[in-house]
Each structure stands twice: as structure tokens, then as C-alpha cells.
Length: 397
Image 1 (tube, one colour):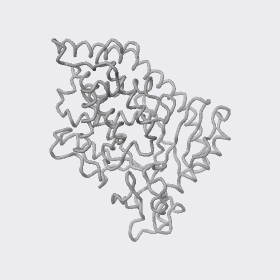
Image 2 (image 1 turned 120 degrees about the horizontal axis):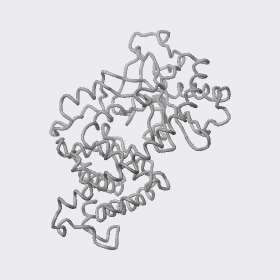
Image 3 (image 1 turned 90 degrees about the vertical axis):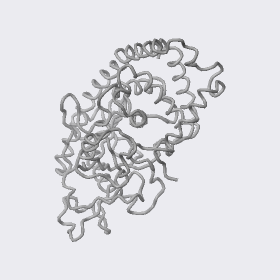
Image 4 (image 1 turned 180 degrees about the vertical axis):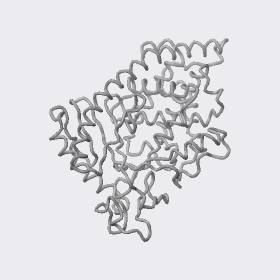
């Protein structure tokens, strides 16, 4: 059964039930608002400690990651220059603008993804019929000859531009570039994967993903967004987000694991990084996400890797829908928003489902071990209870 926004919200019920049932994850009763005669004072106390946590722990995390990014990007840029010498169609798009690198995503403090934007997608049609959850294919436009494409040798007999073939060629080029680049002593390819991953100084892993940027169009599988009965994010922001578009990535898609059809193996993964970033501007949204990422890095980096920063980013988007007014994201509401997201996260982990924000048929927990999700639910519960009952505990978290 396809996920819907309504069913996703229904996932909150078990977490609320757990909050009312002290035996669910803890031996002692959970904090009860009715016991606090001054809820405003309690809220203010929580916000104070969250801001202190943000200024001390989150900012330190950001500074450390920024330093790592500069170090990592020097190596990646050098490798990509060597790739470009061998194959001019793979031109590095890793450029620094306003102290950030376009196309770079932080997966964790030691894991990064660099999106390498390719040129000339024009002779292909974007086909997104919902048969490949989270993916789409690029098919040669009717009447267009293969020879008109810059990527002629990667077009299949059926007329699809193969993400797998482009990735395979790129992997070969990167392997050769690693041997020639000036950082060859500190960088090596990660084996046993079809994706292009570099291990740098035995500390960091960077995935480099070929991609096409699709602006001015919007995928059919995300056509339900925004929901008509939800006032957020408003028509102007919706227009901005849809104009921003999305990316098509050449990477392994977990939702297609075990599929054998050629169209599926040649499919491209849909990604909405810039659209999501644009949606989460304003109010305390980014601060809330930063706190969630820091808590995850410090306390929810667990065996089986059930949770990553993208799960946190997704839940912030859902929280924006549930609390659509800008006043709901005032600094004074930071504690409420954080608690709401942690409760929703517990619920998702218990139900073993976390729908993608734009593509609700895609489950972000697919392939995660059930035992890892259950363990993450218990750890998140302990974390949420600690923050809710004793805001001062953030000093040690």
C-alpha cells in the first residue's frame, strides 16, 4: 500500500502511546506536563539549554566539518582534474561559492558525497512513470539519433542512457586518476562497489556521483506535492522549489535491489537536495536540524547504521507541514519542534518505515536490519526522555 501523508502522520500514535506508557522504554514515568505549574518557564529553560548546546556543540561540529571539507576537496579536486585530462566530458563541477561547495553533501563527519554535474542531457526524455520507486530513466527522444548525444556509447539498444554504464566508465577513469594525482599516497579507491568511492587518509570516505541537474521540470512521482489542504510552504516558495528542480544521480538504488530488468539497472536516482534546503530556510528550522545532526553524530551512530543525517532532514520537512505557520518556528518554539521530531523519529523506527518527503512511496529505512531500527528506537527514546525531563542534561549530551 502506498504511503500517504495521512498514514505517515498516523505513525506518531505509537510514540505518543509510548510517552504515556512508562514501561515502553524506561523504568520510571516520563515527564508529565500537568505536573509542571509553569510550562512557559519550562519551555524557556529548554530553549536556553538548546541554544547553549547549539552555540557550543553544533558550532564546534560545523567548524570541524568545514575544516575536513576543505582538506577532502583538495584531494577530490586533484583527482577530478586528472579525470578531465583523460576524458573532457567529465568536467569537475566542484566549485567553492560563498564558503560552500556546490554539490557536496555531508553524510556524516567522516562521509561525504560529491555530485559531479554532467553536460548535455537535451536529446533525452525524462521518463518517470512510478514503476521504479525513487528512480527514473532517460530515453532518447523520438527521432533523435544516438550520434547527436555527447554520451553516444552509453545509450542502450532500447534507447536508454545507462546510469550504470556511465558510472562504470567513470569508475575506471577515477581509478587511473588516483594513481596519477599528486595525493596518490593518501587516497585509494574503495573496492567491492559499483559506486565511485575514495578513502582519504584512512579517515574519510567520499563518494563521487555523476549526475544531471534538471531545472524547470518536476517529476510526476512528486506531483502530489504540495498537498492542497496544507498551507505550508505557500505558493511563492512552491514555485521557487519547483523551478530549482532536482538531480538525477548515477548510483545504486536500494529500492531496486535484486531487480534484473535492463531499464531498472540503467535507471537514475532522484535527488532533491537543493529543493529541501530551500524549504528549510527561515525561523529556527536550520538550527533545529543542526541540533538533530549533532545528537545523531554523538549518540545515534549505531551498529547497522540505521540513521543518517538525511533521515533528520526528512523529518524536519514533515514537521514543517505539521506546523505550517511561521510563528511555529519562532526561536521560542525550538524545544517543541525538536521534541516533536524526536517523537516522530521513534515512531518511524518502531514502524520500520520512513517515507521520503517528496517520494512517499520510497521508504528510507528499506534494507535496514530490524534489530538496528529497534535499537535506534530505544536509544532515541532515552535521548528524548533525557532532554524532556532534564534540559540541563544537554551539557553532557
